[in-house]
Amino acid sequence: MKRAVAITGLGLASSQGEGRAAHAALLKGAPPVLDETRFAPHPVHPLVPLPFDKAIPRREFRQMETWQRLGVYAAGLAIDDAGLRERVAEMDLVVAAGGGERDTALDEQILAAKPDEAGRHRMLMDGLRPTLFLAQLSNLLAGSISISHNVAGSSRTLLGEEIAGAEAIRILAARIAAGSSELGLVGAAFAGERMDQLLLYALGGELHAGPWTPLPQRQAMVFGSAAAFLTLEPADKAAAPLAILSHIATDQGPAPSRPARLAALLAGLPERRAGCLVISTATGAAAPTRDELAALGAAPDLFSADLIGHSVEAAFPAGIALAALAIQAGAPQVLVTGTGQWRGEAVALLETPQ
Image 1: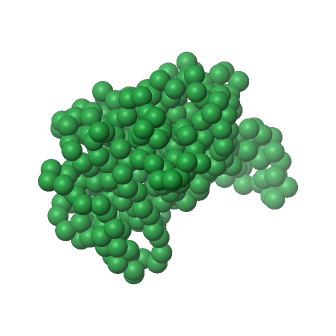
Image 2: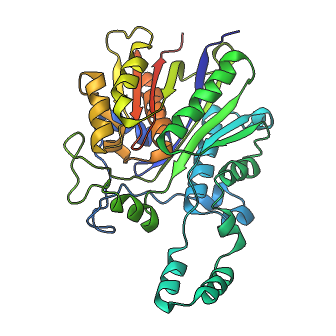
Image 3: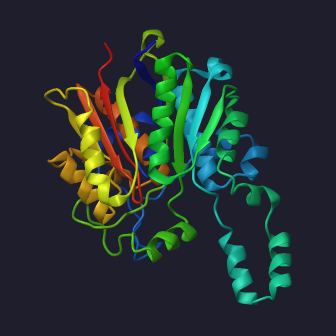
């Protein structure tokens, strides 16, 4: 059995705000929101203040880091957007997640004290809350979503930068198309305003430094804090489908063969109709972005990283969410493309529900 897959709910939170209306404005030319001073010389797209405490039980809230709170919050937005609160017990969950956040204040204390090995161990044991230490486990995001929103179906977590976000959607869509799932929630979250994360990528030369410039003029990434979750259902059973996910494919391998893989993914797409909008989730990193644009052969209509920043695991789910909003705004078809900073390529095609 091969069933059509419908996107029925969107949960988006970013520097633009939360929900459909805030992000639909991006399709009409709303400018990006930037902070170019806090982490200078590296600009970021900062997350807007969100009422996390209203959506997350207090006991859970205290033991979460920002990226977990953001993911749980966006997952709830998607469930409510689709009107599926009464069906969470049957909802399958697929999450793409990175590692937990470092306690940078404790890091600074240890560096300042310069203790011996026993002293370092003692400071770590005394300074790290068990829940913060355990939050290094990526699958705690899925657990927190299940606890906070009572999602009780199967659960799986994928770890692996941009490709994890694309693979999460592909896997859930394949399960629904094959009939092994009737309802699913999928997505990812990324906290880009983290000193440890920024330092990691800056040392690798992958972060843009200096005044913000749009793609493809710059040759490095600008992070944005964002989360994107989608609810997927069989199209023939969906009460109010937003868009049909008619095709999604992924691949990965060594960088030298990336152009060939991108070409193959694009060649495997169904026929693209006149007026097909193209949204690129290109990272901004020089080589992968160059290869993605070369494979497309023409500039995309939108770079999601220009609108909300690059959000790593959440980048491709956010691109799909923006594509669904474009379908709702009247686009007959939307192509979403993505290439990971290190590895992984993905394409997806969304169409108007019949």
